[in-house]
Length: 110
Length: 113
Image (cartoon, rainbow over all chains, first blue to last red; front, side, top):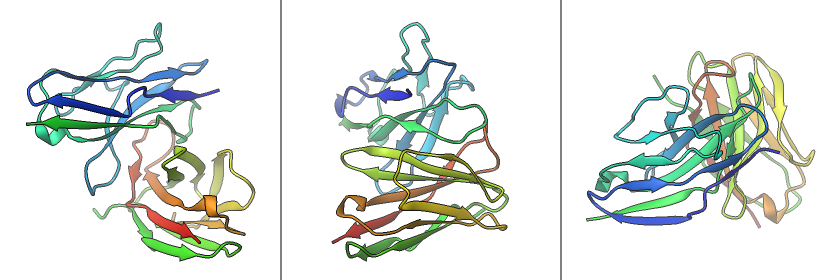
């Protein structure tokens, strides 16, 4: 079965502090992992995907197959990072089916 | 380029009725996926269409159905509405399948009374 777990529903950090949003997954094959973000009153949008291995808006995420994790990190949080973050998994080759975690609401305090 | 559009944006229906939601993908995109978002269950995959063919289906009862037209526009239908069908229904489009990024629409908020 495919499952994505985001253990923190809410996360609050101060501006300038490091941020880590946790994501663990369960999948028997080789999944593709994503982070999606939804800013207030905006659409859900892709933040990054593990296969591209790039940093977007200062965020990075490394796929750890041993720990089945794909944590999202940023060294210095900014107020504009406040949003809802979803970790998602795509397991079926050739499919657009995404399995989402429950999401973490990140609040950056000034 | 215009984004994914969904109509209507808000809908109120009564238990037992049926509803049809529409999704217009980004021009050139041939894949459309539908998701249901509720506070309790989060975002759950409903189905995926590519070139008018349903490629994948989530774990929803047969009351949930969909289709895709030759211009890639998609509709989903829910028959015999139940209170638990109240949700935000999101549509996402992508150029193709597999590696292509999905772009989400604003959603249709369905309330069943």
